[in-house]
Image (cartoon, rainbow, N blue to C red; front, top):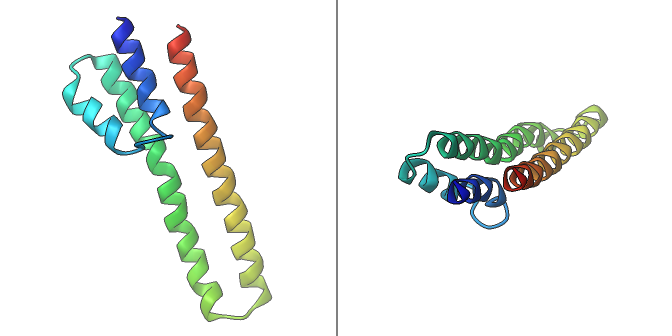
Length: 103
């Protein structure tokens, strides 16, 4: 059971070194259902910053083509939201990894 806890927490700590690769590998290699659940959750949480970055690009394109002040303000707001989401996801992964290790 100790190894399963370490693998489960490693899924979340992989945000530091292999955000997508490690949870996918652990998901397909390990047979423990709880570890698989944590691998899937960690993988989805690692996808969230990518999704927000793609969303930010949709706000960036109109800002590059237009010179409206409203578009620029919208771009700044989108950048702040994307940054906040990325920081929250990063901290959440660290907290979740520590919670699993401390059980």
